[in-house]
Length: 216
Image (cartoon, rainbow, N blue to C red; front, side, top):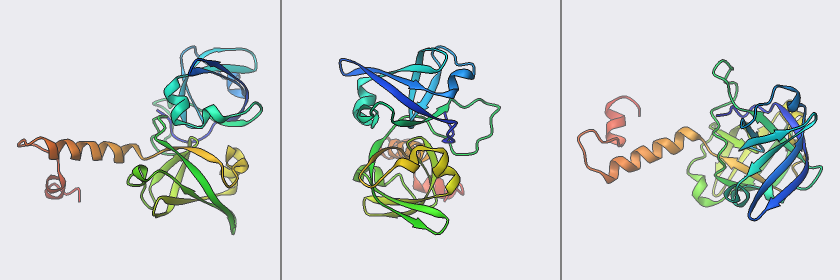
């Protein structure tokens, strides 16, 4: 589990392809922070496993599924990536709950200055649209951000200067693709509601149940 608060921006040193899967070699200051073999690190929002490291870089495994569902397979040497180590129970939850499991990719269609912030508008697959709500949370390349506006197959965010400078969003230009993780809670609520509507039972969870118990 992660928070969407980026700890460091690393540099991709290489991709080692092994069939449809492979490994990423990343240089970062995180290797000086007591990395553990097998620990999870979110790389551009995708939860990956550390398999080895040296004094200035570490290696993570990438499954064929992850290459297919994310932008990791399109990265090039010397390209920057957002990095976050897994959440500890004692940490402050400054962003929102992020699983590191990418739902889809989105394309940056428009980027422009909006006073002291930068506004970014993305398009994404229609099936992911229902999980994005205005003023809700979304993880873009692993960064916890607030949704400003939602339209037909699009949404927008506003990025403050600090977030822009400390993440790869400063390099994100129109036409580029990013990894998207929608709100975790929303997906679980949908699943519970769907299960309740498909299976008749005394204690089923549906909209009537939520309304009667003060949740709606």
